[in-house]
Length: 294
Image (cartoon, rainbow, N blue to C red):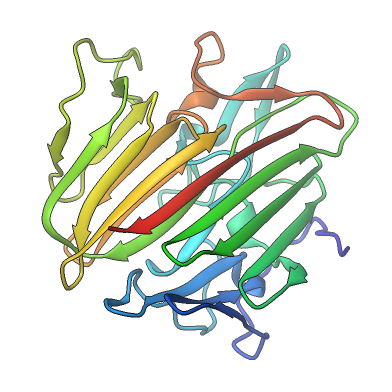
């Protein structure tokens, strides 16, 4: 298995190979060199379910809003690119446009490799070596399996270093635009992660939420979400294992429904139970997201 050194890629090679899996219901195309991305997911009746990714060169810190990419070892923002870990401050290389923060960790800005490829399933892997973007070694894998009625995405994070590593995982698809901007949601709590205290909001979570354009909603204790997208396809996402949290963002061009293992901003709140795991050397974290058209 290849390893990732300290330097970051400056662009995607548009001639890098792509890989496909398919069955009678779905076809999926992957671009491992483009950050382990799922480039398109087509359904026999509804066509593209996610915004298709075009394999052209791009700055890894200005990724296109298309396809679906992995979130390792954290998701959403780390403001000021700094967090506390085991009594010391960890400083990361910023990648946000304002030059101060980090967004979505480094894994989707690295080239992955294919370790297994069959007609209806594929596994992508990344062996990450500590660098300025993340100072801990880890191995990340994504396994995609097509079934007649669903796609299962299994994510696994393993600490391959010699010290305890904080971390989590998630999946970031850009679905075709929502028909009505509404999601059905089953979750225990909703979070306001970047407020003055980052505390959980009180009260029950409504079973349906109308997403304001550009505003991300964050949930924990998540089990299921539904939405109507594109030409009227009704989709359902469920999560198992570590994927107990969820983020949802609606824009005119796309709908992001993101199963994740911790709430946004979790690295900034080490004293709270936010879902971040502290993995000992050799320890792993795993979860699966199941996408169905219903």
